[in-house]
Image 1 (tube, rainbow, N blue to C red):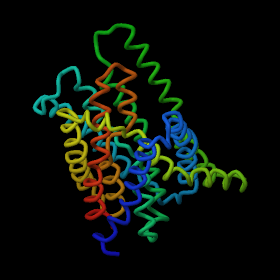
Image 2 (image 1 turned 45 degrees about the vertical axis):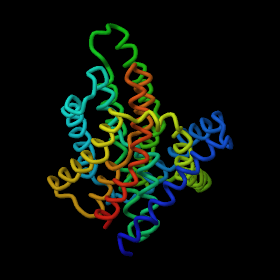
Image 3 (image 1 turned 120 degrees about the horizontal axis):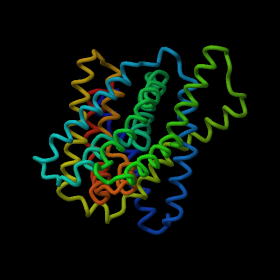
Length: 320
């Protein structure tokens, strides 16, 4: 299929579901309690099931340490670029930690995985290799995002309260359902390869069925969180964050892939993850740790809207 024709077919369902979630929230069909409930169901149930199913059933050949390494190195380089560019872009010193963690955290679970699922639906010849590669590339980087977020938002000089807050967030990382799901999937994959163990069929089918709602559910939940207030708050620092996140970050990823000799499907997975908008978790963490929550929330909303451009370019030029 011609790449230019594939892009609308991949992105339209994704952004339509986002718009639908926002419209349902705006019209009152999704009240705040319902939107939060859907988000919890997806985050604690559907997405973990999808990750466990994808990782545990992956072919061993699909594992690529270099692809994960490329994503991790590009993330670290983007974080450093954010710190260097913060001052010239007019980010106040007190907000620089928030700015950096906003530009390094990609919304890979709620946007990246659904976009790739949509892309591989258009290109079924890539699906068997592509989806397992995507989730296994992402697995170790989920921990990296959280650790870097804590590092940038922990302010020196606040005494014991910093240690208390850092411990609280670290405990949250240890209980993060997406991280736990990746570890469980890897354990099941190891058990399958080492001893031929597999989940009993009823359990495996249930996990697969529950994980099947992750794509639509995550997009509806994220769309419902894009309130008009957050979009209107996108000024100054949020536009700077969008520039670094959606322009600088994918270019850093492209250079990293070139340096590591990655191309084809592996490069596409790395660039698709890096071209995603800022993660909703960046807003949650900024609020939890006393960062600039207004900047983080506005950046999430703005980058989600503008990521249609960055993801469209990746699909147009990097999809094998």
